[in-house]
Image (cartoon, rainbow, N blue to C red):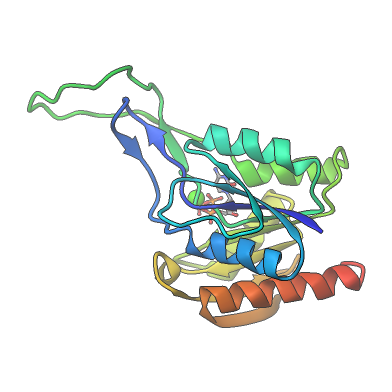
Amino acid sequence: MRVLVTAGPTREYLDDVRYLSNASSGKMGYAVAAALAAAGHECVLVSGPVGLAPPPGCEFVPVETTAQMRAASEEAFAGCDGVIAAAAVCDYRPAVRVEGKIKKDGAPVSVELIQTDDVLAALGKRKAEGRQTPRWVIGFALEAANPRENALQKLRAKQCDRVVLNGPASIGGDRTAAELIGPSGEVVMHWEGSKPAVAGDLVDWIDAWVAAGRP
Ligand code: CTP
Ligand code: CA
């Protein structure tokens, strides 16, 4: 298979030197990309800025902003069999990006923030409309409260086949605990371990699921 993976944070600039972003190491997305390559799949890794080397054997598309991540993902998407959206996309951007550098002057500042595009929802919509080839879409959900309920809502709103649910404890570390949530809210799998181990289990699950006709 050829699989698109989104990973890492995105950045939304206030001026040329200041930005809003998410706490994200990119470790999980990069582990998924490495696991795909190790399992013999082609992988396109669209990634925000992280301090990691792209796994060997992946096509690497570095991006910075959410708009860039969306454009790169939509471009790669058409040629892919599936998508795994592990990116921690910045949900808001300053309404205005100022050119140059804003000078500080001691006075409080308010910044109007507006929501960024939802990359995964855009991909899920395209898949659902059958306009392009990808046959499956797997999202991630990071939840602090009512995790399964919220993950199911995201699965539906973004037209995903499955969602990998994890919690704030996963951010930045080398280990994670995750549940795979199905379209009726059922817990399909539970994994706990190093991010490479969980990523390997996720790819094994996808391989078996695709081989079985994606029940
Ligand atoms: N996602 C995305 N584009 C965004 C926001 C999120 O593609 N602008 C994707 C993430 O990559 C992940 C999924 O949507 O696969 C869920 O992200 P998450 O941050 O958990 O949920 P949100 O929908 O952003 O809602 P909230 O942060 O308010 O919980
Ligand atoms: Ca979010």
